[in-house]
Image 1 (tube, protein in one colour):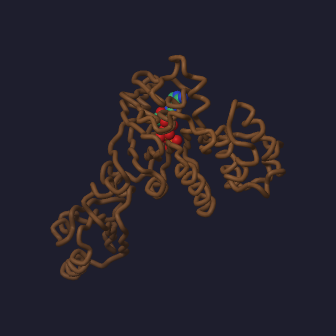
Image 2 (cartoon, helix red, strand yellow):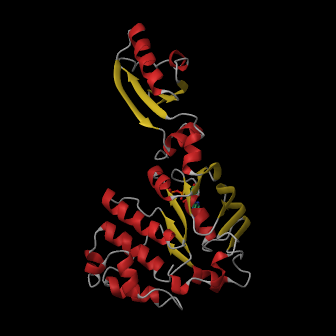
Image 3 (cartoon, helix red, strand yellow):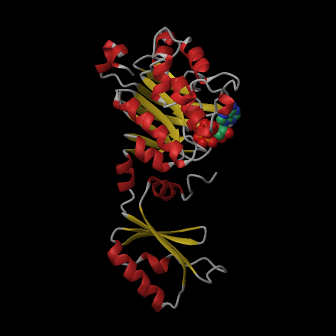
Length: 323
Ligand code: ATP
């Protein structure tokens, strides 16, 4: 959002977005099953969840693309269909999950087209600069890489100079460098006072970009907070995963490991033991002693800092990428 076009009411305390009791049914499918959250202006809010959790459906209801079965959505204090739709459209920028753009157009031509949809906004050149596509301004879309196409799709959402930007899985399928470049654009938008609503199933993306987030599963919010609060809710700093050699015939016994010093809880996942650990310096020696005592050989052992993925696994017993 450029300073020149920032609205007079930008300091208004009304949240950019408020959802209350949001429900969407498709026949018997409860795609969204009673969701509440609020997004203060100038923040990045994330919806994290596995495939089919209801992220896109929630996003589409908020964008006014599909009506809710029940519940209320307020954008800058206004709801769709109550006389403010034109104003709302002007204030929103939408990047859809899959954007099919006309391959024969050039970058400049496409952005000129999108710019014509808005009464105000950024210049086409500025939008090209923001997403760092200056060298490709005359290239046809068919010649762009996946990452460049995604940056261009972001530019189509930014060219109207929105206050609230919707990003539906903006980096799915991109290589690490292309992801970083999308993150920088999003951070820059937010640093200039913009508000972002983001869906992702990459926990590192949510941890990096989001001030607050909800974790969705089966259409419901199963956890909410800042990334740090959510990770802290696990009550563990480290996760130790191990597989016991030769234990393939039977499941390794969780009980044997639960009482170890420094270990908060133990779960079994895909034949591996997953230990939530509060004191790694105590837990690792105790674990190795136990293995020695019981004459168990390790097939593998890894440790990592607890992440949002571990929060999700802890809550549901499944990984974010499992459907
Ligand atoms: P993904 O990460 O795969 O995009 P998601 O969290 O965005 O998943 P949704 O696309 O919102 O999930 O889907 C939620 C549920 O609603 C799924 O069970 C899906 O099959 C169902 N669903 C979504 N759109 C429709 C539709 N138009 N008709 C029927 N069912 C639908």
